[in-house]
Length: 497
Image (cartoon, rainbow, N blue to C red; front, side):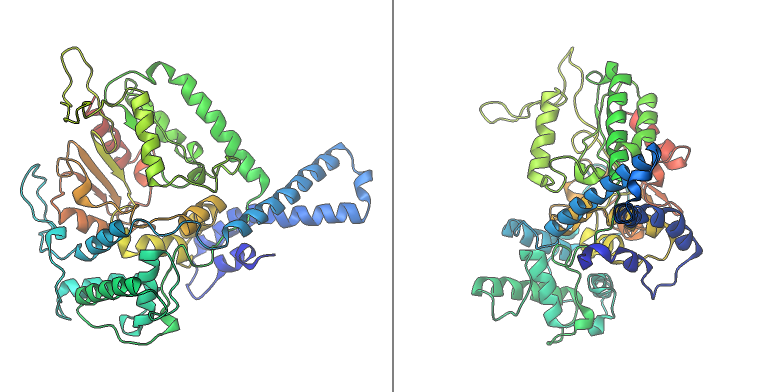
């Protein structure tokens, strides 16, 4: 068996991080029962065939054998898929100009001296970090100290003093070219020049020259180049998800058919990684009950919903395909208007007399971000926490095994992830400082993103009234029924009714 496919249990149990009691409870009651279905099925099928006892089974014994045999064949299929995605990333680097721009913006973030008390003054003049020049900072400059501290995350949080130039070049080569780094001299001259320029800017931002040489103990996290981590899933797991999501999809369409294509300000709900409608069914039902006159669109991505039987399960749409698909769908539903006339002139977005207002509650008319993973992703916390961090608590184990190590999710994050395309900058959000148009929800105990740093990033750009921060909130907790965050989300969405 392929080592990248069978080491999941050893990976989850790996020390030295001290495990909590919740870790072992979750492992014994949730992870182990699901994981063990496959080896138990193999053992049962082998015993039944080798001992010839299959022919003595009653009908229920033969039914159990049929299920076990199905699990065996499915595990072989799953293994072949895991081998298929275990190679290098199928995609080359993105646009070099876009990557260089994103890299420069990531270095500029945090350079401007912006007060963190915020103001939420819509239309007010407030300088942003992208206007700052990247100059050589002093070693003791707080901005340089902060930069060095979070850059350590990309190297497994080793001490900064142990990081060497070869490893930094390897990280730059991955982030710019999505390619391994053999040596600087072996690269073409144009690539050498780009990497040297990036190194120079990084050293200025860090306030110190990075020592020459190499240190294998400070190897960088190369998300789409490192070995992929995939954990077993039985056939019954995927069958349950496929049937459950299919039933819920039809149920929601039938129950709310009257409001599907009518009403002002439709809502587009873009969910995160998990189980699809099974995971978000309760929230969506409560949302549609609270705002019954608002159409709701839920784009379902198979790789984010563990829909292994979908033809594009291992071939997720890139950002251009996703944007074109969503834009075409919104136009087809007549939820947005064309913004330019045939002669190229911009059209008036304001509704005329007798017309219902248009616009979508996402990135078009209003924006609501609940535990967003797109802010400050260049700092490495998301990558480290979700993929590389050793599990120590029950919640970390649940997220890593049932989400992070699932085949489709692992394939998307570790072979198709484009860090520059998935980074959202404050300056790109329409009406970001208007709390009636944009709302941010963060949980202080989020195990996926560093909520405190995201909060700092947002408040430094003027966000105050538009930020809902729960110091004790977990990732996704604001979507759970009965909580204060959940009530605030529904209240805010009703404002546009």
